[in-house]
Image (cartoon, rainbow, N blue to C red; front, top):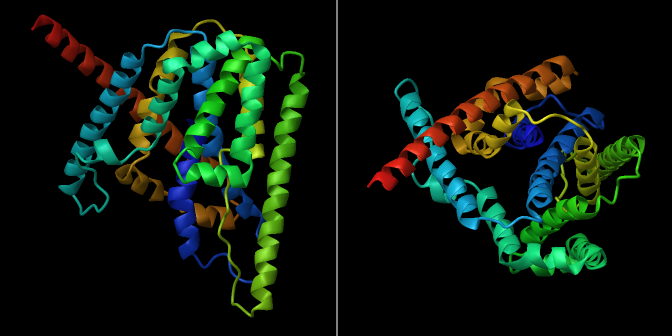
Length: 339
């Protein structure tokens, strides 16, 4: 969730500010802008990890699909109402353009629908098939799905019927399940996990430099005043995102810790943390900081501090809202049972 929040800060705030700023002008490749390229990929990595965790814990379980769907829908409705009230109070003090209304429940978030489809596929038979199929078939299925999402032509064909994102989700779910069932990386030393992460980041940085240099040279050849500084970003199916997700997952899986009420409490609020910050109303709060100026001035302490402040604020609000939602839903359930 930390990775996803950073991703949202950059794509919804830093990039729009960059497109309006005149701080980065002239014919120079500003390598520090690759921070934006990294931040864009963080959200993809976070999404992969989120679904991998589900696959790891659910692959050998009997899924209660009703419980999953009711929890997701109830948190979506609660978040919508809270954000509506917050926007209405805000409007009393100053004009606000991006406020949410009741339609946001059906229109604002993409991830819940994506996640429900993945859990539905696991519930209707994927779990049972993978557990019964054995290691070799599970691995073959993973390789075939990886080929389908990696090869552009196949991915484009699937995109025409809207299957690319679902295929990536199922791949991530199956990858987490494969790790749970067979632990294929148990002999790989931690040093190599972090070496793979470092190598992936290095190649991403080199790729950005080449991309920016090409844009600069193309602008110079056509006598343009400045070159295109747009950031390409990475797809979830890109190799660096998958490799980094896999290495992070394996590294954290090896941490031995006792059961913790604190960790479980924060973890149970993860979905609410996502809902509370990824919406039109909250995105405007990202503009509290002049991110582009900090990147231009190489004020990395200020940049990191600003990001940490936003993360802490979002987590605190999300955890509080999650607990309030749990109390409200428990009260409603008890009332229905009494009736």
